[in-house]
Image 1: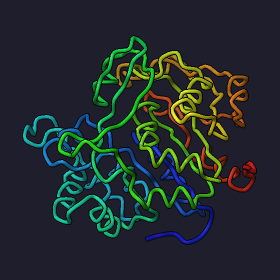
Image 2 (image 1 turned 120 degrees about the vertical axis):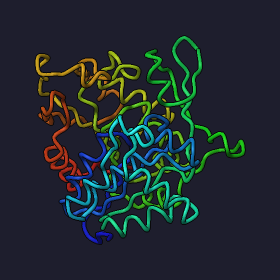
Image 3 (image 1 turned 135 degrees about the vertical axis):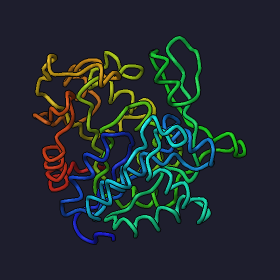
Length: 332
């Protein structure tokens, strides 16, 4: 099911933050396209991509559920993850297995997503950033190199830059984006980056050369939803301006038009750091640094405290995103 009215909004990223925004956008008058990273190599997604040579299905699964109109009980089945004592299937979500099976049955991820979108009554478009799984590479500030998203994060070192390459089964060639994703970026009224892990959820998409080029060429307003908390192994001690500076540096120029920044204080006593062990502390604000990069800054209380963690309030964020659509920056 494809909505045919309202602004065309493209959301680029991965991880757990993306579905929060998409779920709320789904309730609004917008035509939504989600472009999802394919460099994840951890957990169930990583195991499946290694055995089946399919793009990692976890982020795609979560995005499809966020845009789905099927009954909640069917969503629960699709999202069900086998318990650790089920050794053969431990940690696998049923939806991941279905996506892998359909990819094999239909000869690729694109027809699999199209068919599953019909089954799940997905309202909007969901595209993997590339039709094949990619490997994330990182260079750290000590000039050492490492490949693999999970290993890069686990290294807990300061990242200097990242890039993507093909998977071990493919020829040594430059990764390319799914054509429909490029068309969606070209036709978009607004492009949203995040929320999500800067180096492992957002940048892997932009480092596919033709996606990066399309983002630089677009006339759409580009909005970055800055993370509320820093992340161990990625953005420790980063200010919000450093998040944006990293994005701009990777694409070679200042391309982020607007930044959404949460200004509400996260009570340290509330955070369950054992449960959210990747989270370190609240992102420090540097509004001057943001404006020096040519970004419009929209700061407000976008915080939702839930389950011992700090998250974006999807409704408040999307309210602002829709306001931006109504009052866009005029780009040259």
